[in-house]
Length: 195
Image 1: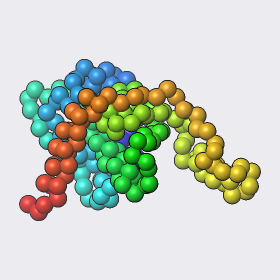
Image 2: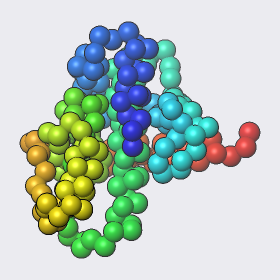
Image 3: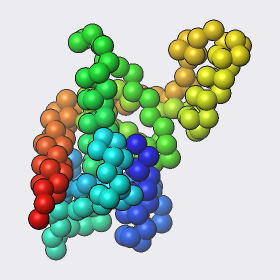
Image 4: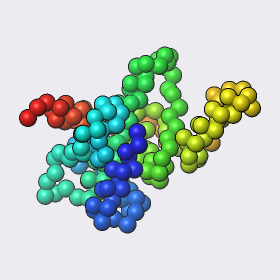
């Protein structure tokens, strides 16, 4: 996914906040899924899994009591729910032993710059999240593939990634986020039907 930073930047700018650190502080003050909001974060159209470019961001549940922190928390959680769907699809197609918990490596300005987002992601996926210290993951991957093709390294899977400290998942919070994900999926399917 590549829309996370765009969603958070839009929320930051729309709410008149200085930076993502300020946004993170406001979001952190809100309980997990404690905002009454459901967001489809398609600010630039839907990317994976549905690939429907005509879809647009939708925010359901707004009220007079909705605060900037609630909007920000719901926005972060909505991105985690989208990544959970991709994660589940990868589990479906990749042969993994049931007891094996994959190592999830995250990259991108939004997720690397917000420890809260990393924690929400770990809780939502039910897996530890490892932030990459390599700021350009795509460039690193391309360089490694080129080195392997030139025979300068034998196997790119044996090159250790440069990772930061992991965020472990909290199963109790994961169950809370599953409720938010279910609401997001329900909204997604409701809006797919013709009006």
